[in-house]
Amino acid sequence: MRQNTIQKPVSIAGTGLHSGKTIHLKLLPAPCNHHIVFVRVDLPGKPCIPACIHNLSSQMRCTALVHNKAKIHTTEHLLATCFAMKLDNLVIEVDGPEIPGMDGSALPFYNMLKEAGIQEQEAQAEEIIITKEILLQKKANPLWQKLLQALKIGGKIHSSNIQVLPHPSGLKLEYFLDYSFSHIPKQNIALEIEEDTFAKEIAPARTFALQKEIGIGQKILGLGKGTTSQNTLIITDKGEILDNTLRFPDELARHKILDLLGDISLVGKRIHAHIIARYSGHSLNAALAKTVDSL
Image (cartoon, rainbow, N blue to C red; front, side, top):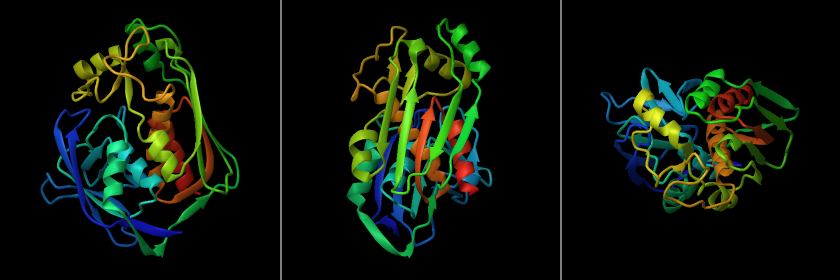
């Protein structure tokens, strides 16, 4: 398999889910072995931030990258799209601190990149083929349990784990979601990751949050300033979706697959594996990416 870039520059703009600012993106073709690099054109010197696991930074509710003090966050939906489309080399110019949230899904990014077209390049793409089982586990965060209690939401936060099995034919992702404490039925989905499957089954799935969680995030943590019911599936105390409708009955689990795909894309190589994630979030996904990168 060869590396790919895009045929022509494309642009898009939208509101940052956390900053609430209007953000402009411009994606440009890049040469072989350039990899995907963000450029903060709004900062002095226009610093570059390579999209790689070594630049991963801790950030609540999103994936953030830091390089030489320059930072970009909420990268996971765009990176998942690039990964699914096998785009290896890109320059991504951005004039703000995060990637715009658009409608909460990756579909606007997919449509933009389809418009740009795919250009095959001379260099061979790197691959990682998993040959033995990997198991990562994370205990439930007691702070989240206390938050549920403070918000007067019943239920229990689960410990999470990710199991990785050999799958030589490509990449298969499986996710188990349990938000039963918020009256959302348990969900699980398994999909082979191909561009067509991504476009139809994963890219349209939107980000979601508990209604009470959004209030806490905005007032105390300074997050979610750009969140609305039209770019985020807001779950009420009764488990209903506020001022919106689901695109899939299991849209929440599908979105978790989107996030997982974006996080493991930071390995920077094509991955052959069957990844089974149970209740995982960005932190455990990042631990998986670091583990795979070290192989």
